[in-house]
Image (cartoon, rainbow, N blue to C red; front, side):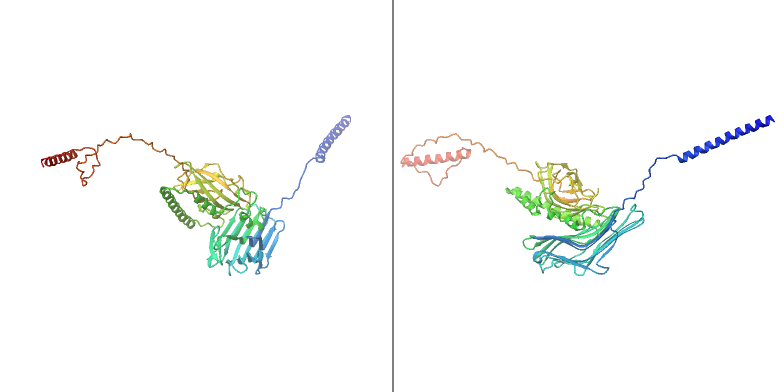
Amino acid sequence: MNLTKRSKILIAVVGVIAILGVVGQATGVLAAWNDKVWGKATFTRAANLEGYARSTTAHAYTNRAITSGEFTATNATHTQANPGTTLIPSATGWTHASSSGILLLGTVSADGRSSATYTMNGSVVTANAASNARNIELFPTGFASVLNTDNSQYSASVSCSSSNWGGAVSTTAVAPAGGSFRVGLTSYTVPSANQTTTIDSLAAGFRVQGTLKSTVTTTAKRALSTLILDVDIKTAITQTTVWTVTVQFVRAECGIGEPLPSAGVQSAAAARLARLAPSSSSAEPSESAASSSADSSESATPGSESAASESESSSAARSESESASSASSSESEAADTPVAGQGPTTPTDVDVGDRFPVIATDGTDLGVATIQKIESTAPSEGAKATVAVKMSVTTSDTGGDGRLSSVAWDDFAPIVGGVQQASGRATAEGSPLPAQLEPGRTYTGWVTFTAPSAAGSAIWKAPGTAGFTFVLPEPEVPVTSMTSKPAPVVKAPETSAPETSEPAADAPEADASEPEDSDPVPTPEKKQSRSSSDDSSESSSASSDEE
């Protein structure tokens, strides 16, 4: 009986211990779940994806003799901040606009139509823009038109899209297209993508000179297509510029993952015409190309016939070099036909005084430039020459790493026998270009480098471009004046005249027919002649005595 009780007690104790153990384990687990855990969770909204779609038509920037101004026929813009679609005025309508100066001087008129769309639907982003223009006319006076597009219409369009919030963007650009236009009696056509048509014609008593440039650019995030007319209108007789005008016939652009360009639509053409109103960053006021020719003419030293012949030979050499450059330019233009999104891939020949576009090989518009003047001097014949190039550079409004940010001496290379040579650093006498160029600004200054005297041309390889070649003038060698000492004068010793006795009164007169001997040096012949003469005189004297 006792054993039975003890067993029961033991079993009871073991059971209590087991229960306590189970409860203890359960309490630990509950404590772990209920312990405080200090942590932080932050929920944020991703930044809004930037993007834009913009269309501009008939945007004109004018600089008249008295007044200046700009206007736009139509403009439609959408960004991520105001997505939507705009069509001005309608799918088939046109908006007419014009701008003129005092007394209707310098009038621009055009019709335009713009459309722009920017939409965001989940991860899908779309940006499209199209630009159309027609009836573009330029009137220097109230009634005389120098440029007329007649019934031609012009168009440009771009498209940007992404299906993963801008991670990968598809960009396309349709090059500007349209019919021909007239300047006076001359008809011009729209250039192909990233090409330029040169304009030089007489119209209504004026000379119209300039360019029509087609620019097509596509990158990983944006697309641009534009057609820009840039002309100077001068009097036909005096060649005085009375009006300068830039007209963007059409302009369409889009971008996803990039902000709207900092320079607004209203400043796009102004950046290219900043040369007309230089900013404070200009290192030196612009000079005309005519002053370069005048300085070169004044530097010529009139003198001997040899100098004239050297001048003629150097002029002939330059003419041959320029002819060769023109021929090579024609060949390069025929061989290099860029496609949309691609710029020139071979060097472009440029002349002093001509304004030319600076286009990268990928089609990026870097701006415009003008080589205003070139000077070349050498310390002596055959020594290395110091070449000074005066340039006016207007940078485009393009930002980022691919823009034109500087023009340095090592961007230039002299060319000898068709081979580019390394240039050397030289000190500029005039105001140099600044070390850093800002977007949408105009700068004027000098770039100086050294080159072999035998170099007939040089190339400016702006970063990202195929380069621009130009003819170098013959190096000017300073003429050192040589002062020759006069030859010493040697005085001959004075010789006294031989004493001569006066002939007697009865002496026979000398025969007038006998010439005077101019050579007093005796010779055998002269001795024989004199002896025979003496004998004859003695015989005649003897005969007279006998008588």
